[in-house]
Length: 436
Image (spheres, rainbow, N blue to C red):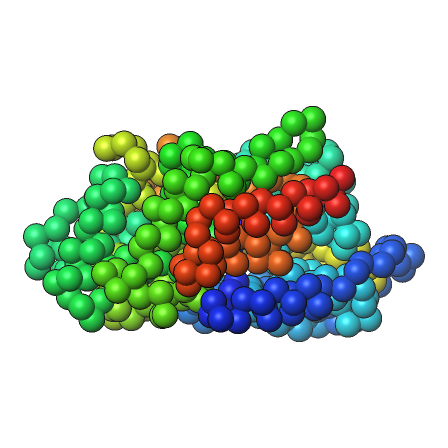
């Protein structure tokens, strides 16, 4: 996801409490059947994610809602922007309580399988198939809303991450953009040594999708799949090597553990935008927040390098979708709102406002032709991306913060890489087993 696929977490000293809270706040999902009625008037509730620098997103959404209200005179829409960090608890609670649940939600593409298993998302296969614009949806994005051949939403944007760096700092210190992960670490430490007030590379102990490219670049895997069943591979030698490379960046010579262990992906971008870091791993969706910060006009972006010179570290193929809740009493209206929010027109406007890459190839090509900043992200997509295990278990692994906990245990010195990855693998396998 943006996002996000974007992973929550806080200080390492609160790990135990955070794990208990995450478990306690995610209720067991009860049967969630679709209501018989399909009301054509009334109030629809819409939940969208709160972004870093959310105002431009709100302006695009407001335009969509104005058009929706004009088309449906007796209908109102209330919109709430919810924190990404608490999305799992809030959305699962909504599945259990239709009376207070939204009708339409934004959700990360890693959550699709879990939300479908929970019975929370409506099957919109027929409506999506009849939608003329759907035929131009990127196949990868379409897969992100598809479970067992059925469609459970519409792709909203696709997101990948690359390396943001300060051109003014690099010029002053005679640095060049790194071409390998080893060079990245060395460059980060050189920047920190010369400018102690800066993080060399802003990293976060709660930034799973900033860490995983280090695993994938060396050939490591999150999990392996056989006959539809998954087994964790996060404790394999290749994965451990990547995790060690990432966690070694937490220290006084780059990003002090006391400050960086609890940082999320959004936190690292906030630090970069505020001029507090020489580099950061950020998404195309981070562009607007960086442009609105103190480093405007003083940064550039390149693909995150891999292990070998000239290679690109595989990025997580993130992105968000818009779905209709199965419990809605306004199905026709909700589907119409979903289409309007994910239309070519809206995706083009959202790209202009937030830098979100469109899921329609023709709209994305138009965006790339207009904006040079898109190129490193398109190049990253072309180099090959990775995804998390396509199973309902991932929602449990994600909401329980298994991988952030693992990273923070290593960074805090509570456990070494071998012990922390072994514990994380066990938790992942327990979740895979429970999901069937």
